[in-house]
Length: 219
Ligand code: G6P
Ligand code: MG
Image (cartoon, rainbow, N blue to C red; front, side, top):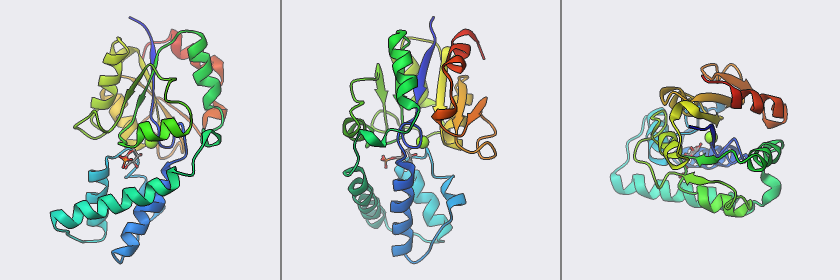
C-alpha cells in the first residue's frame, strides 16, 4: 500500500475561489441582500446546490424550485465568464513544483473537487493530463464535509485512505479529509483551518522536505 496525494482545485491549484465569491455575491445582490467574506468561508468546498441553500438562508429568502434552478444556472454562467479568461498563468505559485516532484518520483495524485466545472478549468490551465485520477462534482452525491469525493479518489489511486494526503483550502474539505482518516494539509488562514493537521498560507511555503516527510509518516 502506497502513499498518494489528493488536491482540491478551487483555492488550492487555482484561485477560482475569488470568482465563486464574486458570482455568488452578485446573485445575492441581485436578490437584494449581501454577505461577508467571512460568511463566504462557509461556501468554500461546498456544492453548488448547498451553497445556494446557505446563501438564501442568510438573505432569509425562499425560492420556488424553478427559480432556485434558474439562479444556480445564472450564477454558473457568471462564474464561467471569469473562468473563460483563465490560462496556465493562473496556476497558483508553488503548485507546479510539488506536482512535478510527485510526477518525477512516481507518486500518484488525484484531483478531488466538488466542482462540476473542474475538467473545464483543468483544460484551461493545461493540467488535465497530469492527474492520475480526477474526481469532481459530477462523480459524487454527497457534499464535503462528507469524505465521499476523497474516498473515491483513494480507490482510484489504488490505496487506503490512511495513506492519502489531502490539500484543501476549505473548512468543509479539511473536515472531509479528517473524517476520511486522511492527512489534511490546509492552504490558507491558520485560524480558519485550525482542524487541519498542517496549515500553510500558500504553496510557496511548502518545501519538498515537507512532502518527503509526509511520504515517510503515517497519520
Ligand atoms: C468547489 C468550490 C465551491 C463551489 C463548488 C461547486 O468546492 O470551493 O465554492 O461551489 O466547488 O462548484 P461548481 O463549479 O460545480 O459550481
Ligand atoms: Mg477549495
